[in-house]
Image (cartoon, rainbow, N blue to C red):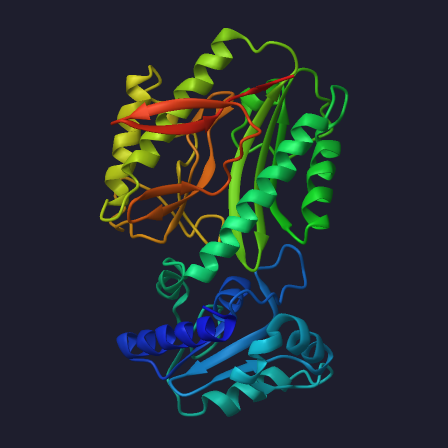
Amino acid sequence: MNRADEVKLKFEKVQQFLDEKNLDAVLLGTNANFSWLTAGGDDHLEIIDKTGSAMIFVTKKEMTVIANNNEIDRLKTEAFGEVASLFNFEVPNWYDPQGTDNALKKLGSNLKYGADVPREGARMIKDDFASLRYDLTEAEIERFRWLGQHTAAAVEAVAHEIVPGMTEHEIEAAMSAKMLADDIFPTVLLIATDERIFNFRHPIPSEKKLDKYAHLVLCARRWGLVISFTRCVYFGQALADLKHKQEAAAYVDAVFMSETKPGAVVGRILDKAKDAYAQQGFPNEWQHHHQGGLIGYEPREYIAFSESTQSVRANQAFGWNPTVQGTKSEDSILVKDDGLEILTLTTKWPAIDVEIDGVVYPRPAILER
């Protein structure tokens, strides 16, 4: 599937969405939906903002981009490229404070429309619309595979390069440099060393210096798709108790993977993982950190709860992240009709092989250096 065909397929999905929701149009303003509909285009400006430099107004007949005059040339050339001809363009002047509003009034006059960003007069459809992104096209899967392998290789290289005495911020910078040099944007970097790993499940980097143990957690984006995984490195021989905890987290992770198959209900998958925690002697550890869920154009398109009723389908991606205090097992996986594929698995990292029902799930061990 080429990029133009992918955009056309997604336009058809939006048209079906409009029929189902009894709407005439939708206004898409989030980075996630811009990248999804444009088959990998990027309109971000501010690093931390989830909206970008353009919006797309989609009716049952056409797609129209609204972007200011100071942005449009770059967007047409780089974000849209070969699919620009599939879109119309409204180009307000940046210095007209009413320009975007007037463009929307022109496009949406007498239309009932929804929006994924707050907009007066529009129905909020962000959560409902997100489900259109869940099932990946073959082209998206190929992009995801590339992203998984390149991010894993970069982070694992950093794990072999860092040395005791480095601060967590220096480790963060090393990971960022490798990502950005490959046109991959790190959206989440959680770095913890030594006791901070045991104290905090979401450790943002600090000035703490590495002594023996480092915890590297990454979410990274390219083409709008977001990959996630975790790697841990220990300088010297890791304590037996630490290895035991990592093996327990790996087992729970393997249970997550074995249960994530077409037709499975997400809430029941989580319940199986809770049982696995108990089997490993850590019945309450799941309570201290969310356990992951579906991934795609957000780090988690949704998080799994026991009450979750979504069903797994082929060509969906998941990121499960079970933790046992001080350890974590996490990779990004792709669900297929005949099994699953670990998108971030490489042959250069030590593995804990967990066998369930005759299938071996290689889970990341603690790298000892």
